[in-house]
Figure 1 (cartoon, rainbow, N blue to C red):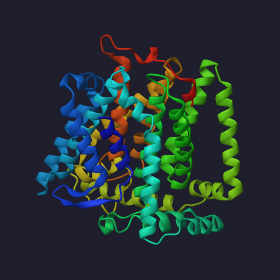
Figure 2: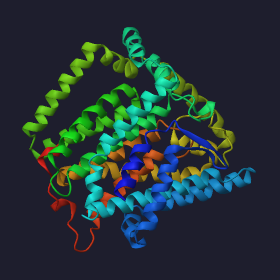
Figure 3: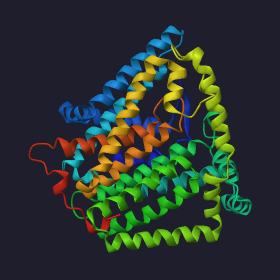
Figure 4: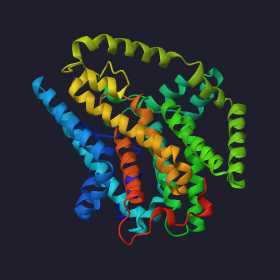
Length: 428
């Protein structure tokens, strides 16, 4: 199980690798890894393992089942196949499997897996760096040269198109799937791996010095990779992490010397980015690069214009004309009967995030990265289209559900998360 977990996290960043077409659409490497992981976990543990997760996430699970049924009914009515609904159910199985596994880990079981998860950030960062290096080498991309031109022009679009979009070509994806926008899910998983590593460092036995050193190196590497991603949605989700840590510390009146040091180090890092010129590129990405905002505004205009014709039973193609909004695309693609459970899903996640954030000062330190993990699917719900939750968000939600279930419904005889030692080395 330990080797399977490490393999899963090593393969998930390689989302530009296609493995051929299926009746459900094009199959990619990270999907095979996720479905293989779900099948292994679901058959490895007793069914009662997943009961607490299903109880805590009952509204979310029921809404997804209803949504899958509605999508299938609409697709059959329109003469199509129920591929999207089947995908929804398969990813729901991934959610349940991940939730069950993290429920066990949070209750103190399978400690060898928890220790391997401490290396998750390092495994993902290493896998992504190697994978991107090979992809750029194959496609003749010179990242240093592109970075230099990007900084000189202050234009983030240069780096996005000449590095990411060019590097993703030629690895089995269909031409219409090869896009720089893949980076949102890839680097979203980098953020998730950092959160999982941090949680694993804070529970269980005291981490060895080697684990602490690897963890810290992975966190630094991950921050650099997130900055290079130039993904607004992922950077916004990542910014929630230090914000929640600072607010929690202030509410508990315990801002530590270590946290002050990290704050100063972060300020120095921002200063270094500004000196290199890349900080200006990131700033332009948010403030002056209006191309993306104008494009989204046009897509929203088209989407709202199509609502009178498609709100009831859907039928609108969101492949080329996606609004990049989960709720709006669901309404246009599958109609009001799929939109209503989608709305319940988003409202449930938002309620969970707000309620956990407000009570975070009363919760153990180990739950901080868990709450931050909820920010990723919430932010992406407003920036990713297609009417379906992307794969990385399913894993993130399973992580949250499992740990929260262990907090609220701990196993009899297990060590609750609030009494698990939080090592000083992981106070990030």
